[in-house]
Image 1 (cartoon, rainbow over the protein chains, first blue to last red):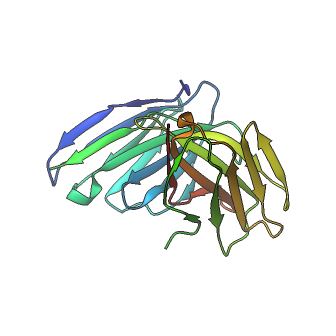
Image 2: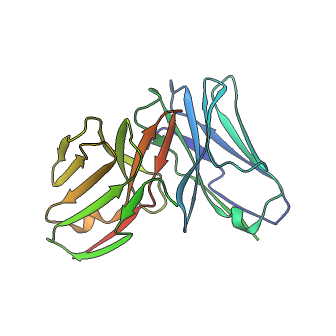
Length: 112
Length: 110
């Protein structure tokens, strides 16, 4: 158990819909990272927050947005969903910004 | 195109064999990490290498960071079925971005 909690574990929805994925980092970790893992592209970095502020942005689509709340939990919002958005979405947290990342078990999104 | 290229992508070997996984890039990284991921779980850190030329050993696993800090390798001696999984290299660059390679899927048959 990494200490990072992600909900929901599985989500099935239709194209055009909007979903929210939630992440609770390890106690004391200020940084939260979001990654997308699909079969053909490995782990793709989406976005990072540190203590509520956006710190780094990767290949995140404009249809996707994220935020980190004062209690340090984070949410990833995916809208106007397409079939190609089906993937595993991982959240990770860390204490030191360039140190070890602790990953949650992921949220598996299936868009039909 | 991946910033970090891993090879091979797939590897199926018999128990007891040795293997090496490579992680290559044209970019310099401040540090490189190796993670292992099992089905249904998130990646778990195995090691971090920071200094060019650094070699770290973790039981039967040997990790090396290239002198120019652009590449790394993972060598497993006498592989066991418990080593089966997805091995991912990841590099830290400026901007707080940890970039992952495409992964090497290892299967060790008893």
